[in-house]
Image (cartoon, rainbow, N blue to C red; front, side, top):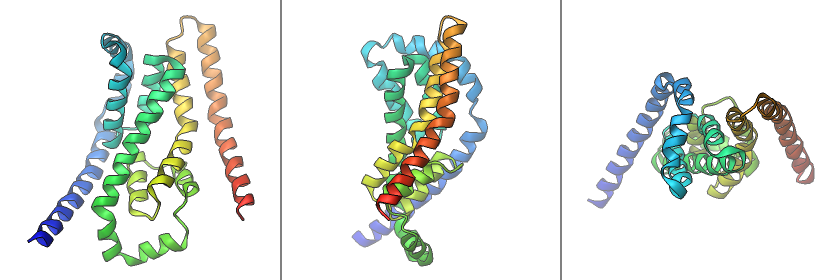
Length: 224
């Protein structure tokens, strides 16, 4: 009886995972991202009324919606508008990592066993290509794939939880910092300050990925 319950729970979890993927595709097509950014000042005022709990509320909302497939850069930009650059980076970065981890952990629990049983060649390929270290997660975070699908693929792989955290923490930084800088620039009172933030954001967009590639190259040379 317990075995039957276990199989039923796994089937249900797999169906929920498939539903999550389908729901994410729907969210990407219907969410009015531009309208949300246009309402950023209203969001800022609403959070201001919450006092010291505002960062926590924003972090929890970011975690939840990132786990459901809403693009994380939306929250990075909003965080810059609401909290400024410094706190915006902290809150949005932590929230998006937590959201990605929830998706990763759920995919591992719900679908990894099913994939290993029915598609053993995929598991063998993953192991032979050494998709197991934090650097593999970091590289996948640079691919032009929606974050939710990226996290699901990593959940089905042999990547450890710790390596997922490290690779995602580093991999999310370049675009996360850039988007938060843009959001922080929008709230500047004068055009000169706005121009400075946008210039720094443009530099970050080009320089941070290059630094990331250099860092990986150095790491590979030391571990070759």
